[in-house]
Image 1: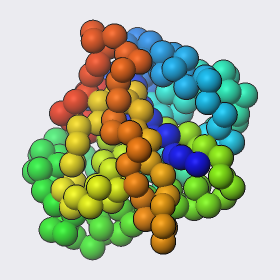
Image 2: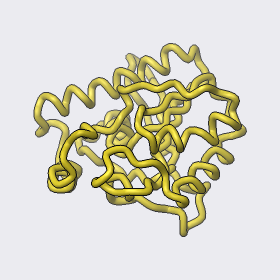
Image 3: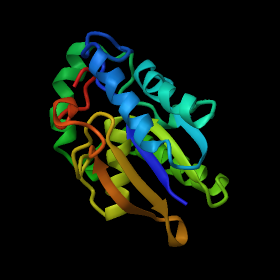
Image 4: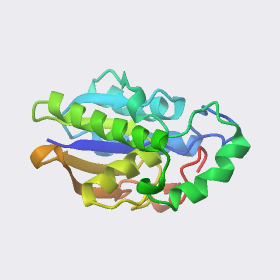
Length: 198
C-alpha cells in the first residue's frame, strides 16, 4: 500500500491571487500526470480545498473513476488570507529553515499533515491512495520519511509524483522521491518555490 503525493500543476497567478486556478501549462501537466497514473488501482483520491489542487485532480478523477475528497489537512501551509507581501517575504527564509525552529502553529500544521497521511493509509486497507497537495505538505512527508528536519529536504516540482508508505509503528518510508519522469522537460516547473505560479 502506498500514498502517491502529487503537487498541483503550475498556477495561473502568483501570490497576488490567494486561490488561483491552473495555467495552460498546469493543465497540460495535470493531463500528463493523470495519464501516467492511469494504470494504478487507487481506492481513494484526496485533494486540498484550493482551486489549483482541485483542477489538477480533475483529469485523474475522470481516468480513475474516483470522486475527489476535499481535506483541509493537506492544504497549503499559508493561510490564503495572508497578505501577498507577507507571504513573499517569509517564504524563502521558511523554506531554507528547519521544522524544529518553527513556531508552534507551523509545527502543529506539519503534524496534522502527517497524521492525515497516516489516516489515509490506515483506512485504505492495503490499497493505494492518490493525494493532490502542495509543495510544503509533500516536503513535510518526505522529511518525515527520510528523517530530515529541513522544511524542504528535496525539491518538489509541479505535478511531481512522490510515493511514500506507512511502515512499522506508523512511520513513513520514502519509496520514490519527487519524480517528473512523465513530463517533458519544457513542462518541468516549480523546482524552487512553493508560491502559486511557480
